[in-house]
Amino acid sequence: MIKHLIFQIYAPLTSWGEPAVGEVRHSNAIPSRSALLGLVAAALGIRRKDKKLNIFNQHYQFAIRTFRAKSSWFSDYQTVQVPKTNKKSSLYTRFDEICRSPNELETLLSQREYYNDIYYQIVMTETAGAPYCAEQIRQALLTPVFPLYIGRKNSPLALPLSPVVYKGKLCDAFICADNHYQQYNQHDPVINNLLNSVADEYYWEHKDQYADFEVIKIQCRQDQPINRNHWHFRPRLQYSGYLRRSE
Image 1 (tube, rainbow, N blue to C red):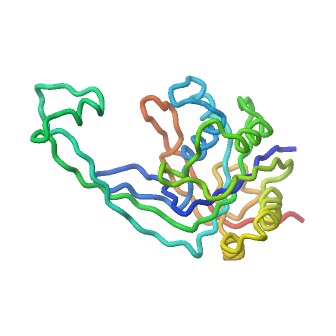
Image 2 (image 1 turned 60 degrees about the horizontal axis):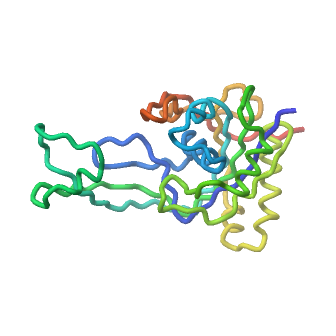
Image 3 (image 1 turned 135 degrees about the horizontal axis):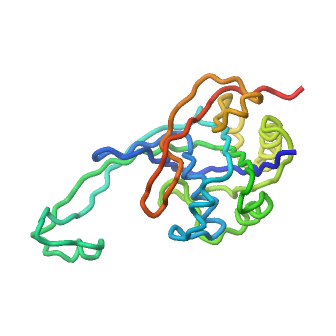
């Protein structure tokens, strides 16, 4: 039987950054693969410069159910001081930049997008040769090594991840998730309100899972990490559609 790790994600603010072009950093409503891998790696205590991270990122599959019918979108502005362009000098760190004379600094504006009140149910599936099993990751999500946040450091978790291990088909894993978190959050009116909203669309990343879903859309996302030190990512396909219930 295929082994899955199920967990929930909820935060007042979420920002799943898309590739940045210019001054605007857009957010997708759906977590990127790199963000979910980063969340789990942080819980396990894998540092960004650890060579194990590149191996870790090549494994596991994620499927997502998103509850966003009651969500809203907004943006804010951030300012950052940077030195004026000077080809005769080299700056190697951020400390070098801000230590310049005030007359040599200028202010840049950038725009960030956020969603609020989106609740997610995540199904993480082991792949062959995965360095950590579902039980190990479950324990790490219960007692994470590093602080966990949702896309940005200003977006901390507002609910425990409450991870559970499930063996079976992916479609049944989502049914298990729905039953488990309905009971887990039964005394929380805010989350109950989200769980009772329309959430018929599911997202997954492997074509072999077609049997569990009816495909309605295929998108290309540039979020598969291939080298964390150099911030290199490659594209992958993201499928979305409706769940086919087991007989």
